Length: 211
Image (cartoon, rainbow, N blue to C red; front, side, top):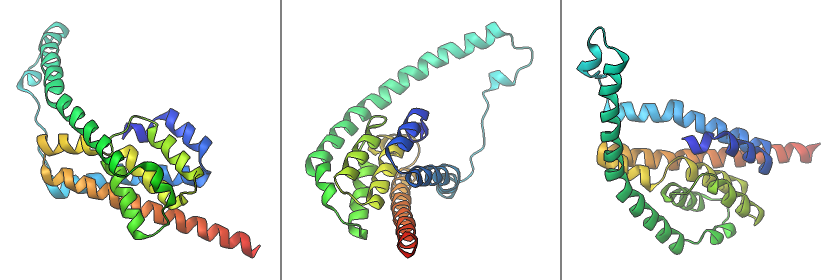
């Protein structure tokens, strides 16, 4: 979620895109992170009991004792992260490049807003692992090339919040159902957000025409 809520990216978003686009992005990101995702995790994984290591339940622990306990664990966890995530980073980068070759992003600019194009945009956006602010730049370019605002929103939302990389990590370390559930939930939220923004813009256009 950090790329979606990074202060620099948010500033760029409100500079490059219409204000309603930015507001919808923040609203739907907040809705997903604070409501949809916790609900999904609870429904799939259930409520888990929090476990505190026995060491920290002891009384009279000094700073020296705590640091001696923590630093070996930090080094161990760092090695574990590198061992488990680096292969997935390489795999997700390869799969992301493969998807771009199969579905060149510039071809998306010719799409019209319908359920089929929304599904395609959401699928590509949710699968692709991209660096921070890449979603913003690509969406801005496609918007200037004529991609409808609803499709732009769906791409922007899905690119920045999830990808095949965290999906593989969650699949391996937590739950296959949760990884797939988050994937399709991100897609669905992006599609609904695109439809909502399109509807809002259509409403504003009609109001302006009536005036």
